[in-house]
Structure formats: structure tokens, C-alpha cells
Length: 398
Image 1 (tube, rainbow, N blue to C red):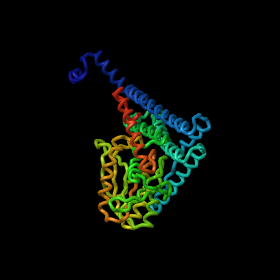
Image 2: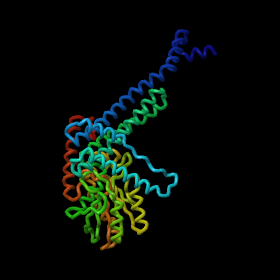
Image 3: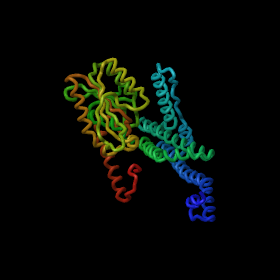
């Protein structure tokens, strides 16, 4: 037994055995502390980076409102970044959609009231973009706060399990936070983002036809496609808006007999799928809390209206950051998909086409398509030029 023990220890002599035991004791007592210190260094650095992005978001929004960094303005924005929305009680699911609708309307009114207070002299389109920028900034702020919360919890409890779990999630958290930071800038400036693709398609279909506002922040144009009467809906632009598309559809379905509703929207792609690829399906492609989709589905079921959807695939980060060329270039394929859907109806029938998504940077006519195309192409050239200078450049940082 003694010989076996000596064979298990390095060297086989008492000095080596002692050193081995000391080394094992050192690892047992001090390695976890060394490990957590190393993890804490990484967590602290990430927390500070996220907090800096949150502060930069506040300053950027303030500069878009006023060229002079007024302390009162910055303090007002900082206070509003703590804004929160409490979901309604859903223990009894009956009527919960109406509760959500009520809460969401209150949220929108609160944002609009705040922007009117801090930026009374801006035009309506710029105010709408500021509202969207604030929404993105609040999300960025919440991410930074949650990471800081867990960093301080690990520091206080020395809990290595929580530290390891947080460290494992950091790459994804940082990726989402950086995308949200870039998205906040784009929304505040009123630039087209990936999620603007639905309104972008709608604007292309509208062309030079006249539009009119038929619901809250929603414009409509009546056009002819393949011998059918088509009502094209989109949120009013080019300021960042989402609009109440369900209300617009309710207005049209009361006045006309609708043969089909077609929705165009962005959809989250899986890793490995190509950005800008197209998919067709049934149902209403529409993100968010689900209130508008619920209302549209209720109308469709009641009136037996078929629902079609055409989606362009992009990552979650691409949806909230400036529109990419691959997304913009998918427009002709989407038009072809829309035509295929229209052909499943009879000539002379009425169809509704919805451009779902945030209309940031996208106006209400075909003229905006040209300006969006030029903006996207210019940005792509800038990215390629910078990548030639630095191969490791993150193209989304531009």
C-alpha cells in the first residue's frame, strides 16, 4: 500500500510529497478565489462598458433635441430612463388583451407627453423619432442595470456559480446591448433600420398614389394590382412609428368586403440562414405584445378572411440596427411573393396589404424608396472602405 502511495505522488520522496500536498491545499483554498477574481474583473469591465453606453445614449438623445447640453434636459432624460411598464394581472385570462391594450396606450401617451415637454419646438416627425430613441435607450439602460445588479450580487456573496453563469451569458448580452445602442442612435436620428422593411415595401407599392391617414399613425393608399383593388397600409413616416394597424383594418373591413389580408414583416432568422432570404406562410406576421395581432385575427375569423404573410429574414440585431443591403435588395422577391398571394384571389376583389414594422426613415410614398436605397448603399460603401483598412472591424459599429 505504501509503495502504491509513493507511485501516485511525483518524485516518490517525502519532500515531493509535502510539496504536492501544499500545492493541492493551495489549489483547494485559493484557486476558487483566484478564479472568481478573474471572472469579476471581466464582469466589472463589461458592466462599466454597458453603463457607459447607457450614458452615451442619454447624451446622444439630448444632443438631438438641443445642440447645447442642458443639465435640466439631461436630468429629465435620465429620470425617464427609469420608466417602467407593469403587465396586467392575467390570473383570469378573460379580458387580458383589453388590459394590455389599455396599458400600451397609456405608455404611448406618456412617451408622447414627455417628448412634447422636453422638445416642444421639434417637428412631429422628429418627435416621433425621439420617442423611439427613448424606448431603445430605456432598454439599453435596463440591460446595464441588470448586469450591474448581478455583478454586485457576486461581489457581495462570492457565489462562484452565479459568476460563472453570468460569464457564460456575457457574449450574448454584450451582442444584444451593442445592437441596442446602435439601434437607439439610428432610431433617434430617424434612419431606416432592419425592422423598417415592411413599411419600405409598402412605400414601394404606394408609389405616386395619394395616401390618407385612416387610423392612429397609419396611412393608406388604394392601388390596382393584377386587376384587384389593393389597400396598402403602413405606419406614418418618416418618423419612427408603429401605428395601430388593427384599427385601420377594422375601418376597411367595415366598409369593404375583403378577400385577403397580406402582411409583410421582418422575421428572426436562425444561425446559418441567409440575411434577406424570403419565406411565405399563413397568419399575421407581427411582433410585439400581440394585442394588434389578436384584434386582426378576431376580425379575420369573424369575416372569414384568409391571412397570408411574407417575411424577410434577419437576426435580432439586424432588425434594430441600420438596414443592410441584403435586406434592401430582397424587395423584388417580396413583390413576387405578394403577386403570388394576390393571384389566389379573383379579379375585382379587395385585398389589404400591411407593411408591418417600425417606419423609421421610411416616408409614405415611392420617393422614399430611392432615398432609402441611396442611404443603404452609401453606408455599405463606408463599411467596405473601413473593413479594407481594418480586417477586424465590426461592420455593425458603423
